[in-house]
Figure 1 (tube, helix red, strand yellow):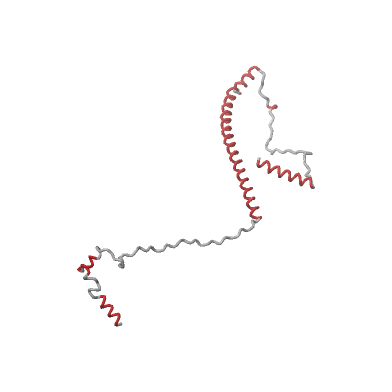
Figure 2 (figure 1 turned 60 degrees about the horizontal axis):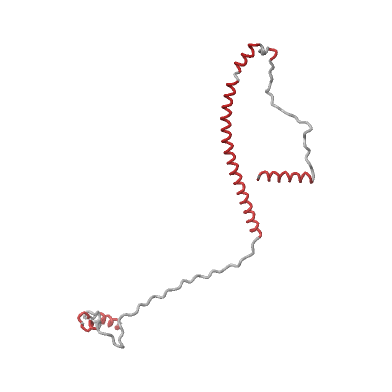
Length: 190
């Protein structure tokens, strides 16, 4: 404790705080005089802090494993489905173009039909034809006994005899069924 008090007193003295340095003339002479062999300057060389090189952590590499046959089959299936989707989108595009051209043809044909109907009605005026034919006697109006009425209120029905196909049984029937299915699939993708 006594040494700590002595240190406090020593630092609090005017000499320790360098109050009289401004009046000391020998202090100003040291800046102008050349250095002698044993003296050192008051400046120290600038020491740069050491830079650490960035070290990448070493990644552990996993050994290559064998390719799973399920993965190969899965990728092949995805590829086949992608090709099928591409073909169906191409078919859809061509069909939509065909539909658009057919709709424009239909509208032109409807206009032509209405024009031809008006021409037909103007060419054949039934009232004038009837008057012309009945006036010279080539055609007469029907009598009451000549008129015949048909009752069409019943629905139409047709019966075909001896036109039934007997289904083929056995191996030939199975092969014929598979051919029909494959033919339908090929027709779908045409």
